[in-house]
Length: 270
Image (cartoon, rainbow, N blue to C red; front, side, top):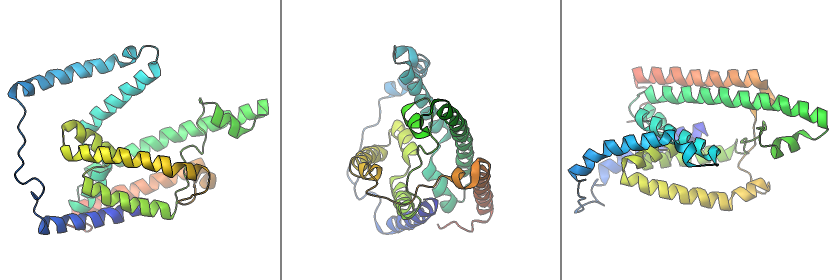
């Protein structure tokens, strides 16, 4: 998918440059003027922001007995705040590397990926050990324990059969689309919070397309009547240490490539 994203974003950047040279930027907005926000509202916005920030701390209490959902809502709100203030966006990470050569967004994503890999890897590795022990003690099959006991995270959960042509084609579509849209999933959400009208359209379209995809394709994938590739779980082939070393190695190569490209602009396509 990574290779597909890079191909898609390069195509998207080339198309964007062609569009800027041949299509007027105001072709759809000519003659349209939107009123600016009243000055009184602009003064009230910081106050409203502080009120919402304080309410975040009481989110678990506001949910009453549904404490779990309150905690998840709090984490989501804080994540949105951090993403907005840091301008975190996967689309920007891939785009800026080849458009301006800037490496700072890439460094942020690499760090986030390593944190997720370490956290998820530890959870799956520890839970796998517990599942094996309980299976031996009770005689219940490991798969039954993993999928019916929600306190465990089975090793193959979230490992989808998409390593192959599906990942390449999907990556190209996603890479091209996020350049035209101006953001990925996370970047779209905080830009919507900023009030960018274009990203409101992107968010609605993304929600509809995701829902249709889940309704039409996902049941076929679960029934094994449709496949976009092979499900590859690296620890199965390399072991947990080997898989972690491989991922860290790829991230380091990506990191040094981004720094080198920032200095030389060898792969800047614009």
